[in-house]
Length: 127
Image (cartoon, rainbow, N blue to C red; front, side, top):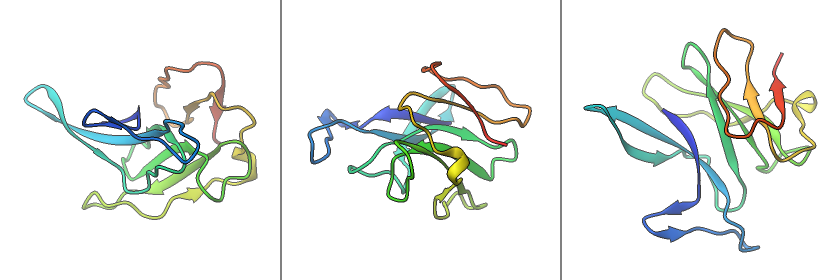
């Protein structure tokens, strides 16, 4: 399972240079009915937020929102490939049509999947 969590690990609150706690995407594994081994994804950073993951139906692409370097708006939609061994490619900005002017968003891809978001302020369709 991929999920967003604030940058709070092992009792320590991570902050950027402006003392802001950012968001990161983590992956957890279901073991004996419990989600365990939550690990940060390799493109997370203490300098920008990475949030709201959505996995493609074939589980080969992860879509997410971020204000990482290369972002054109306040936050953009990105995708990253997932290899068979579970490693990640280089995140790719989805372009000008995915630029967001608001910070609160919800991702929903039109690929026969449910859209679940804790922030229902904006519904974004990637076409």
